Image (cartoon, rainbow, N blue to C red):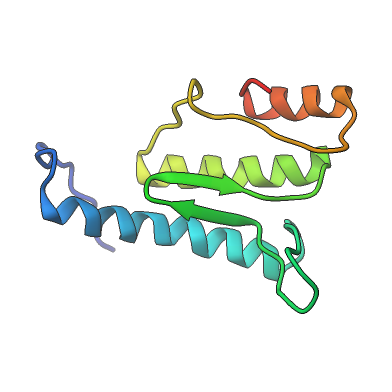
Length: 120
């Protein structure tokens, strides 16, 4: 068994190493979301016929979670996200997070907002 070490310093802003560390960290989230998609726990959305479903997309340091409108699916997303944040030590900035939906009843949007503690 290997003990974990505690870091005592961070990286300076703009350090070239920070990009690679972010990629390694983000890859763990991608793998977890992809496993959930393969197991059909978080189905995602299909962009076009013949294209596999997507349940996430990453842009620089922004993450977009894509899924059907269901509190069950949203709780599964939340668990993956919580596990990732716990293991990585990352934090969500809830002031920058948003929940979007189309053709979704307001009460469902409100429930999803409460699950994530993020405004609609």
